[in-house]
Structures are given as structure tokens and as C-alpha cells.
Image (cartoon, rainbow, N blue to C red):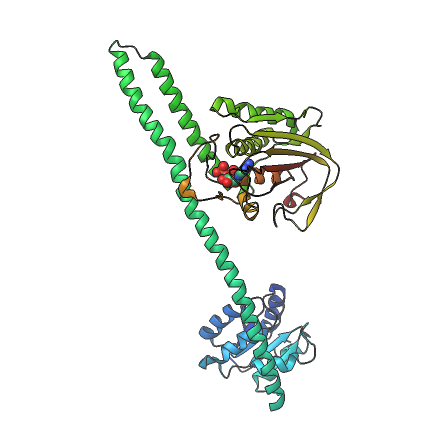
Length: 448
Ligand code: ADP
């Protein structure tokens, strides 16, 4: 069969085939190459235009249903390029409903071949188009279908503009989050660095005096401890940044060990005792000892509860309280937190597990921001008025505590969400964070 193509032709004729489906491209390419054509392939309309302009093929085969510029639009665009005005463009399409052929011709195609192609007749069809054969439509039909096509184009343009505006809004938001993060990260790093600098200078002069026989041993120990605390804070900030990048790359290792949640929460609380930090916030823990153990990563889960509890302490004024409760649940319907945290309209069913709730009597969270606080670098309010502290009332961070908590919980197959009646500093409507953890970590999609 391969002898059919112009026996006298020395240089094989170039045919450009534009189709987003690699299997179709491979089939057509193999078929036409066996007929001694030089087949060029493009996987999109835009790529097709670029290749057509430089390679000037003798014929273009055009898939119609493609993402981005579809076959009609690509053809119309090619017809405005003078070097391609006369090139035969043949629609190769699975669209066979009434009017599709006419629509393709009105958009500028010269012919129409239906998919799936018939491997016996396809090369002959191509040859006949190369030989000058053209499909035709009447003037009236052309007029009618051009109108229809124009309307479709304007609708597509409108949908694209809406899509672009939305994408632009998202980019602007991400850009703002990034600038805020730079401000906050600089602030969070500079504070401990400045402290280390100041304490180190003091330590130097106190040690110098001590070496010259003056007192000061106690002061040296105190300053060394302060330097240690500041280095600890620096390490926490850097670890948060590393952890979020591990979670985003889906590369955080999650151990699978039996975890007693009561113990994990107690361990998190031990570091956070409000009184130790000069705060008077009551922490009430409902007996959690009867909760059955779950499978998970003890240390990571401790970090989750540490993040949630330190927020609860930070955003609850002195005199307020935090109540921690736990319950066992069978298969449950949980709010779809990827849509909106508390105003979810859809839910998803999860297997049995445990729900821990952490309810504070603090300043609350505005409804409009209850979803965003789980996004990285998001902090409520103006970052310009930010004060960095883990426990001080209103103290801030770099907005990574909740995204890290969410990432770890989701890596356990769980879910975290918040409910709050809104934000009010004086009335303290409070916030309730809920953490669902299944008894067993389900296999990840890439492990099934
Ligand atoms: P950071 O690591 O900076 O503390 P998070 O991601 O933990 O940031 O929290 C993001 C924001 O969510 C906080 O800046 C705060 O505005 C809000 N937030 C978190 N928990 C609470 C809470 N219990 N009460 C009120 N606001 C909260």
C-alpha cells in the first residue's frame, strides 16, 4: 500500500495533523508515513499555528474538539495568515451531528472527514484534497452557519474573560499572601535575631566582669537561657516553613503507630500552660482517657494540638476559658472543608474515628475568613499591626500553624474545621475547632 503516494515525488509532502489525543496522532501519523508523507504533529491549536507558519505544510488535518483554541477557531485564525490562506484545511472530527460539517466549512475548512477514520479510505481522501477537491456549501448555508459560529465565538470569549478575571483575582490574592508572608517572616525572624544579638552582647560584658572577679554567675545563666529560647523560636519558624513545603509536596513522613490522643493533648498542653506565660486562661479537659487509640504519628499530632491550643490561648482574653472534649464517632458526614469551613453546603462521609473539639471563649473569627485561615500565610487582620508571640493575647505568627495542622490531619485521612459566630474583641463569641481522625489511616491515592 505504501506505494500509493506520488511515485514520482522525491521530497515527501508535508502534512500537519493537529489533535490533542496522542493515540489519534500516532495512528494517523503511522498511516500517512507509510504512504510516504512527511507528517508533522501538533497537540493544540496554538502549537499547530506556530508549526504551520514555519513549515508551510501542503495540507492540514484539524481535530475540532480541542481544549484552548478549538479546531474551528484555529482554522479561522490560520485563514488570516497570508501564507496559509490557500492551504487545504480538513476537519477530522467525531462530531457528526447535523450542521457540524457546514459549521467547519463556514469556519474556513475545505473538507470534513469523520472519526474514527477508515484506514483504507483515509489516505485516498487526503490525496483527493491534495489534488484539489473541496467540499462546498451554498451561500445561504454559509451565511447561516457563520452567524451561528460568530455567536458561539462571542459566548466563548465571554466565558474566557470571566475565567481569566477569576484567575486574576486568585493571583492577586496569592500575590498579597506572598507579600504578607515576606513581611511576617522577616518580622518573625528579626525578633529572635535581635534578642539573640542583645543578649549575646550582655552576656559578653557580664562574662567579662565575672572573669575580672565581679559577681554575675546567675545573670550569665539567665542570659544563656534567653539566648536558648530565642534560638528555639527561630528553629520553630524555620521548621514551620520546611513543614509546609513538605506537606505541599506530599512528602511529609507520617508514622503509623498507636496513638493515645489524651496523652498527645496533655503533652501539647504541658508546654503551653498559660500561667507559665503570665496568662490567666482556664483550660478544662473533659476526661479523654476512654478514647480508644488511633493509628497515626504521635509527634505530628502533638504539633497539631499545640498549634490549635496556642491559637486558642492567644485569641482568648485573660479570664476566659478553653474546653477540650473528645467523642468516638461511627461513619460520619463532615462539612466539606475545601469549599467552606462552617457554611458548607455539601458534606462527605468519613469512616469511624474520633472527633476532638477545642472550644475557646476568645475573640472569634469572622465568617468570611473561616476558610482562608487554613490557607498558608493567612492571618486575620492587618499584618502591619502584628506582634509575634505564642501565648500573649492577640500575638501573631506567620500564618502557617493552621495550614500545617490541616496538612497533618489530612495526611491522616482526617479533617479539621472551625465554627465561630464571628469576630468581636469585646463580646468574645469564641471559636470551636473540630478535628476528626479516623481509627486507621486510609491508603493514599498513589498507594491504592
Ligand atoms: P499563626 O501560625 O500565625 O498563628 P495560624 O495559621 O495558626 O497562624 O492562624 C491563622 C489566623 O487564624 C490567626 O492569625 C488568627 O487570626 C486566626 N485564628 C486562629 N485560631 C484562632 C482562634 N482560636 N481564635 C481567633 N482567631 C484565630
